[in-house]
Image (cartoon, rainbow, N blue to C red; front, side):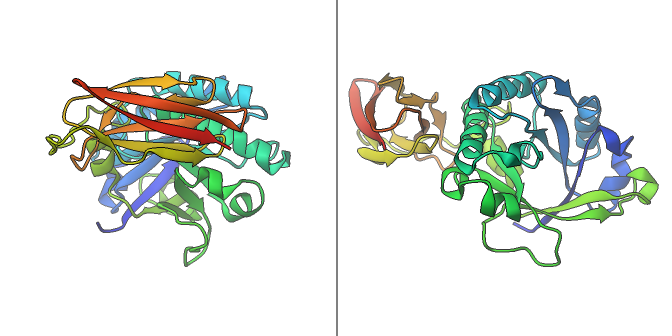
Length: 301
């Protein structure tokens, strides 16, 4: 797909004339939804509605304040309440830039970020992480968050390829018709994925799944029989079967498994398995479709 142009806004941006934004060639908007566990952005609903009416694709972002995993879970629950029922064709992003959280040890902050992302992903949303190069290099363990899409903040004429980004915020001094009368600073972004297709077809962000019918009539099988994982990691199991399978978890204190969802490519059903703490534990899932069963073991190391 071709690269799409977008902006991101919040309540402090003021009123936006989304028709003018669209006429200026912008295709998507990332809109602030919330921060912490008590503050909902008062302009979110209006911006989501009016941007969509003007023909822009929309996503949202949450500003992280949590300094413990317990607070991260509370923030995730608050965010899910704020966006309940909202249909968005771009990701829901976790904004990792608050000064107070950047004082935390890298592993602790990574635990916090993965806690929020996993909880929101398991609720059926397409998750991304917003961060700049400093945060990615020095404050987060990339190996543990790379399963989420990256929205990279880097104000430069060329995007770094050090971390694979799906959205690039390349300027915070843009001038866009319809925003602050075209005279004030606004963040400018480029996206490199066909998010509307991915999110709609996959049934994320409150859209019904529109994946093609499963093309297999072969016996039930899983794409892996055993997987080693780190705490906080997510592995997506592909179950090749026609009917929606049932999933049984043995070791619920070790892993969590999502509800099966249709694979966008028609290969079967996808099951997100999340590794929990404590480490050095073992668990497995049993997937059942009609009279057939298949198992997959998970070792959380």
